[in-house]
Image 1 (cartoon, rainbow, N blue to C red):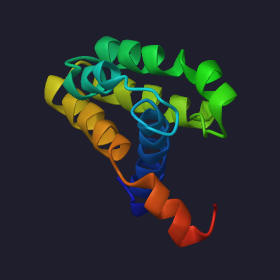
Image 2: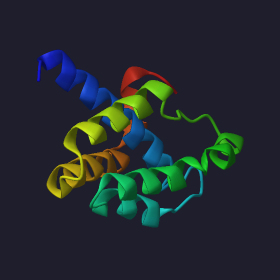
Image 3: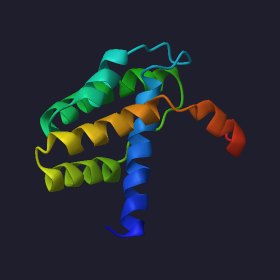
Length: 118
């Protein structure tokens, strides 16, 4: 895997993780830890996609409460391509799910302040 592929991989994971962070945000009054746990504990591609689907179903509700960044079609495409490449390798699926779940707990507000987005 080239460095460009690694950077692209990281970006789509961050984008999905950022979205997942809204599901546990005080700002949006959502506390869907069960969805984040489902992403982190997914053992195969279907479980991971189902957990993300549950989270994305909440996007209309979250949009009504504030400005959010929903994963792009390109982010979803990269996720699907990656899952196809690794198949049902439980260890690799869990790495991806756990990584996205970890990004959900990142301090995104601090990141916005640093960049001057607020």
